[in-house]
Length: 88
Image (cartoon, rainbow, N blue to C red; front, side, top):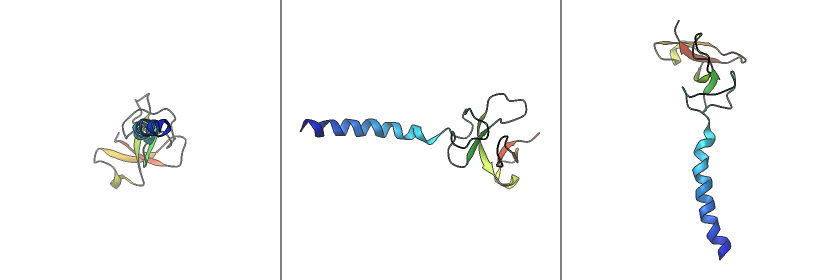
């Protein structure tokens, strides 16, 4: 009986950790430019603009029509993927 009474708290604790496994949201900090592993699906880590020094997760795109009106679809450093970045 004791064995089963420990299962419920363990499952609750593990369930609380699962949302943290999804990666950083778009706009949140990340570390490795060109990496998609640190970000949510359809996002990649890179600098948001040329004056930025800290990388963030950016929305992956194929062309500018997938980005906001204030953004362009540009290549990401260290990859062959494009992401939405602020227009210059």
